[in-house]
Length: 559
Image (cartoon, rainbow, N blue to C red; front, side, top):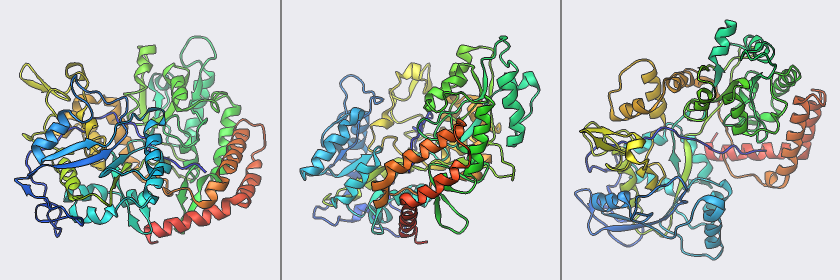
């Protein structure tokens, strides 16, 4: 079994916010200014600022994408200066480690093993097993109770857009970790097709798999690039890592038959089923076998990862690739670099023979916040994060974050006009200096904004204006498709730690699945081999895993 992680690539900066120092918690809660924590030290807010200042120690991995100006670093930069001056909060790394080569994970595990003192806050997005090790260490408080007490209405509403974001970080019914939010639907796929090839053959939008068949045939056998050679094919997929994956995806083919492999899906009776052994998977594999036999896909598809398969599309070798709405930013810009006359366009995911359509979903969560049970004043963290949600996530006109997080970093004034052009700003992204990597994000805001702009409406808010200046029209059009098809999403329903039987049997079951699927797709074995695989999967631990997964789901959902 493969646990589908939340691998997201964000191409739009959400760096905006409004003015004001009102960081009052949600209704019917205790205000930080009038409270003491469950520990001993009393802290006080005066005009929205702690006086004397309070220190929050923290750990988070620092990636190579984080760029500082000369003289600044992780502990001394424009954001840490802002936090101290605005809120009276000093942000201090307990230690600093890069995210590359598992350096951060190794050092944190050593700290756990030696029972070293943990910081007030750990913010992390990465290896899920490490998250579970931290949760199971017993060193972190029930953050859900603190969230209910201190989080602002804006932050609560953002989390409540999808309450299942809590599930990965629950233990014995307690919400130990607070999910770090990302933009909703950010990785949900659309179908990208070479539009110049579509025009050449006079094809219209393929609404079904049957409509898609003649397009695949023409792109494979009728010289769509006009070079007189048979060197193109219809669909570029890469299933080296998974069939249901973040780019160059083939999961939508299974979705057309009501299934989604490599993840746990909700059945009509409310129970969870592993999609690779679910109804409809056999039919999808048979179709992939047929398409491979007809040459509609590269013979190297099983060796291609997501990026390599996408390169086949950008190089002009394939006419269709399926992936997120943001692909015009990367890697589809290479299409025109390789061929200035080439065109591409986003299309909806087609339906199957019974009218079904399905696509992989993207979680609203992208990381976790853990709060040390010995943190003296945990409410201070909420003062900090509430401010960002209330003023930065969706800013007001005239607010302190109207154009970005910090002037001279993510925005500058040129000839009297504010601009976020990275060529003029130097490419600094101070939201990456924050405790939660991106400052604060309201999941629904980004895609709703893209769809609004795609409809021709003029931007009216600072967030909308910033999106408008940095997004090409094909991305706007793709966002409209994503939102129009939001009802076909098939989300990963199991987001917990590997179950006991998974830990023992995962490797053998995964190898069995990968080998069987590959043999079928390449036509090296009959489609009937799938039935034997399903039977063996259940008898080799799959039955017990299914029971354990459903027990987990009932424990976190109460259903």
